[in-house]
Image (tube, rainbow, N blue to C red; front, side, top):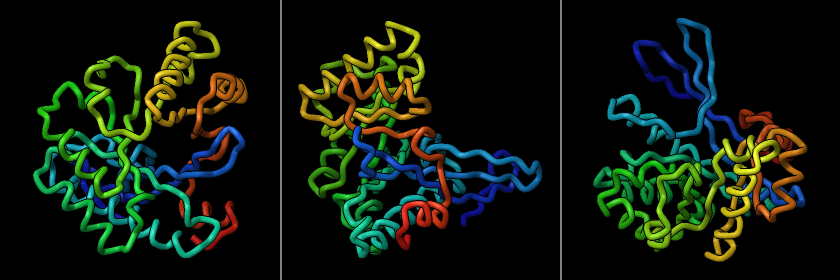
Length: 251
């Protein structure tokens, strides 16, 4: 549990976990999500970890806590045969990647916890390409040399050009949730989803569809050859105790 002050409200932060599966519904990975509960208003929300980061000290501390927690969880999973091959994905922000010591922060967390870097996946939204000055790509390359994978989230919303995409040391593209939701009723959304899958196949990248909430979405995505899936159709985000019980291992 982590506490932070956001916009003047005391927020108790905890982590939730949502599975990622293949088209055969085999669990291959997990996404880390931050659950925020505000003491004054009694409200709660669950958002992608590290997705919306600013420069406040509370946010910086939150980033370190999420990354450290993810690496610690991977180390615990490594000793159980059922979970030793699972990946754990965490969102990062462009601002975080712009920190001079970001790579060192990641490597230090891996070293402290003993987590396997092959199992840690960092996710960056496509919008960062607008502000990239070259340093971010350099850091991504360094992370790749240390076996930490980086994926491009929300792909297809229009920021990434093909010329920039080919320079990125990625292992995965993630179809933006808007296209996942719209693919059933909108031919254009369906066409874009198909294009992303075809492009990824040609570039030897995996494709993940997030926000898969209905059987119709699942059926469409499997029909076009999507590789991995995440969404409430499979399971809602769960705290680790419930997540571990659901998957019958000691997390």
